[in-house]
Image (cartoon, rainbow, N blue to C red; front, top):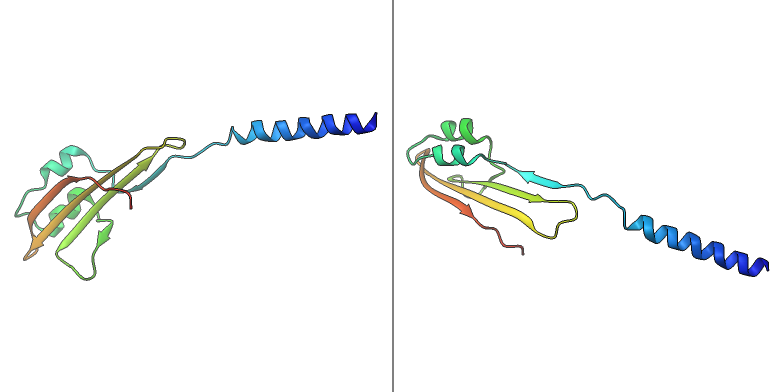
Amino acid sequence: MPSMFSRLRTTAVLLGILLLGACVYRVDVQQGNLLEYSDIEAVQPGMTRSQVRFLLGTPVVEDAFDRDRWDYIYFFKRGRGKRADRRWLILYFIDDEVSEIRRDVLVEPS
């Protein structure tokens, strides 16, 4: 009889662990610069670096090898979701003024 009770208790404990394992909370992951669409649209060729930094904030990536390129990267993934929202805004400068703007560059997972 103790053997049967022991097996039943072990089964109940294992079942409880499995059920609790499915209830683990997954936190949302957000990284980078969350930029408003209106702020992105306000960036125009000819704006200075200071104006862009005031409008959009400090870029996530300032390439040490290419001083004339700023990357604003945004990543958001809901806790249990399988899909992630990835955006990439790239600004190119010539003589400290915006020369090219690449909006809504989609980032593919590597």
